[in-house]
Image (cartoon, rainbow, N blue to C red; front, side, top):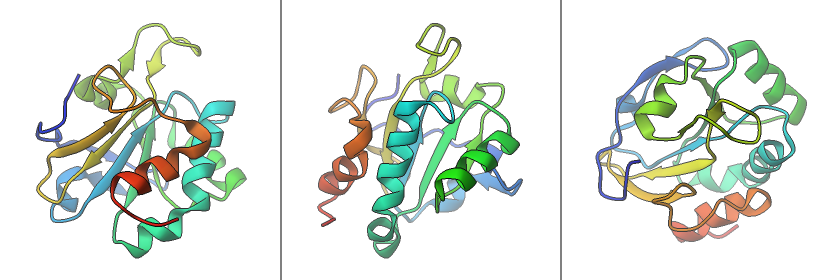
Length: 157
């Protein structure tokens, strides 16, 4: 598992719209990268909707947010559409990115997949904060996750 102060591993994938994504393209910006187990599950929906409901605060601060999980782009598209999520979801079908970040879980509530962990990445590409996982500062509170992130960076919701 990665820890605060580590370089955020760069990776390339596509988002739910099929657009190429490369983390290093966001150097110079703070970034929220949140891993979650599965689209349409209660906890994952609550977490995504928490971020959705406060998204304008992060957007106004120039902080992009990306969800990432296993599953196809099509399933992620449906999840985004149903809950009107204003941020993109990154595709990690083979769970290689989850393994790279130490969020791969052999056994969790939904089987093989991804642990609920959020990485706060600073403008230099280093991990500034972590919610969830063994190295996390605090457990992810799905219904208040946007508040957790905003409080960390001193943003007012």
